[in-house]
Amino acid sequence: MLIDSHCHLDRLDLKPYARDFTQLMEEVRGCGISHLLCVGINLETFPRMLALARAYPAEISVSVGVHPNECRGMEIASEKLLEYGQDPQTVAIGETGLDYFRSEGDLDWQRARFRLHIQVAKALGKPLVVHSRAAKEDTLRIWAEEGASEVGGVLHCFTEDWDFAKRALDLNLYISFSGIVTFPKAEAIQEVARRVPEDRFLIETDAPYLAPVPLRGKPNYPQYVRYVAEKLAELRGVSSARIAEVSAQNFYTLFPLAATASSARSSSSLVL
Image (tube, rainbow, N blue to C red; front, side):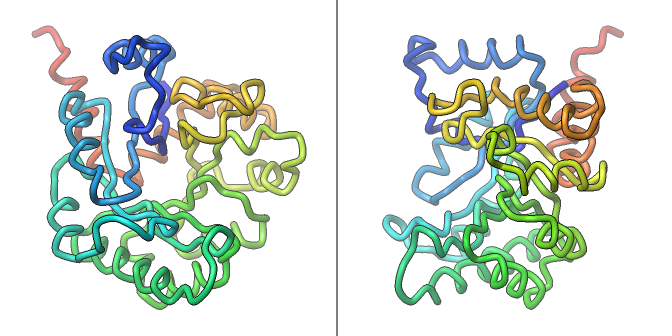
């Protein structure tokens, strides 16, 4: 079974599903996808995300955080982050990190926000979902300074080279591949996909963004994670089933609370 380790379910265009989320979930199941991690980008929309997850407790988990490019809306308060982070459906803290590509000027606020997320994650004993764009040195420096390796995490939508990947792996970070790995000119990312250890990678869609080839440029959906799996299978010389199996194992290792929910679902379906 496949797992989409990073998507934004509250931002999907549901028009093709008659604006009915249950129809989407039926299609997700039909595509062999067993679990979705719905990743938060601000605190204002988190309650809506949490409501989705509670409707599908064994199939949807959430993370809570404020994206580094989010500079409007609810102010970051450690108390609110802690409150939302303690919810049983919340398996991670983030999306957090640094983005020097889209943000300009003095970005001390981004670095301080990243540190706050790490501190909350350590307080709760939950891993982090990390966004890093044009900020690789500061990302790893702050990660190390704050002792984030204690809880670990994942560099989502990886877009860097093998040197950076190796340094991240050494700091207890997983590497997650999105649809970008299917793009013809993504040679550096494809090299990382070939070389990353089998027990340290995840796959994701980042839906509704970054649809993979052959759907590039169109709205993305969790169902399309199979194209990422197929590309990794091609690059690593293994079957798509093997990529699905290994990436699922890695997901549940990094996010054990999601594994607990999945196990509960399996147990409840047993006929005694």
